[in-house]
Amino acid sequence: MTTDSSPATPDHDIAIVGAGPVGLALAGWLARRSATRHWSIALIDAREPAASANDPRAIAVSHGSRVLLDTLAWPADATPIEHIHVSQRGHFGRTLIDRDEHDVAALGYVVRYGSIVQALAGAVRGTRVDWLTSTSARAPRQDADGVTLTLDGPQGERTLRARIVVNAEGGLFHEQRDDGGKHRRDYGQTALVGTVTVSAPRPNVAWERFTHEGPLALLPLGGADYALVWCCEPGEAARRAALPDDAFLHELGTAFGERMGRFVAIAGRASFPLGLNAAQTLVDRRTAIVGNAAQTLHPVAGQGLNLGLRDAHTLVDTLSAHGAEPAALAAFNARRALDRRFTIGATDTLARLFTIEAGPLTLLRGAALTALELVPPLKAAIARQMMFGQRR
Image (cartoon, rainbow, N blue to C red; front, side, top):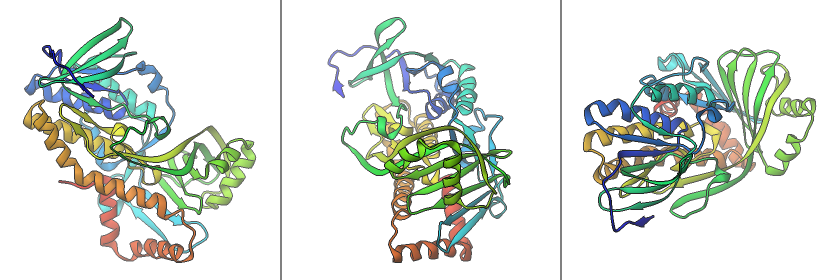
């Protein structure tokens, strides 16, 4: 970040870089507040909307995030998660989290990345947001009155000035630079993902099974289809990725068990490395970061998108209260500290704790899962954290 000694009048009050789910939600929420604040908002995205709309990845959206997104848009093909079954392979201990215990329609939902982007993009298109597609932003320069971005787009290179710039363009862990100022950890794991079909589906049940290699999750997509997230050592992931479907499904069945019969098909296999990349602070004077730009988490608890949406919603509330000024960003950073610290820390601990195959730790994990079943207030507190995060 450099300082510009010859500032010009800002073109926009707020510029958002990145139009994934968090960037789109931020733009939509800001646009709805601009009726009273009269904000001019720019949304800058290096991709065309259609590129993201066709993305088949499945993501977990908590009940709390559904409540927030209902103010904008919600994809019609979302699958409710009514029960979550957690266990560890080959050892005692399991817990079941049920929606009825928490008086909610669903604990969370499974949505396709492309579906949620399409829904949110539709909501943003109905506003006065200045959406610049196929346009990349670089070289931000701050001064006392705003931030200048250099844009590369269909009309060539130009500059854009805004009073506040929010970076929501994060990407996956292996795509991110280690640029300092972040808590970064390579878990030495790769996630194998895809859509599997089972012979005896359990409707609306999400499964989290801890193995000595890493967590194995199955998220309901409706009917007999489930989104698979299988975390394992990179070499083992590469070997499994190269297996024929039948051999892959056989190994998956051995790891998961027979709770849903046999695995009969798999489609859309892909893989990506796993790591933690969390910023120590969310703001730098007139710039802020949200979503994966602020933190990339292990998928073990499905909290990455939910934490990013809470970042974005709190930012909108704070800007609405204090205006598009550095003081508002400082207040936003303070408001997000507790939830981020707790969610990032808990996810990091789970990612590491459940891959250690030491005898005492195995027993401790089993005891912890059993304790959740025997101590309802403890299980309720964990469920509330998963649904809503830490509130302040």
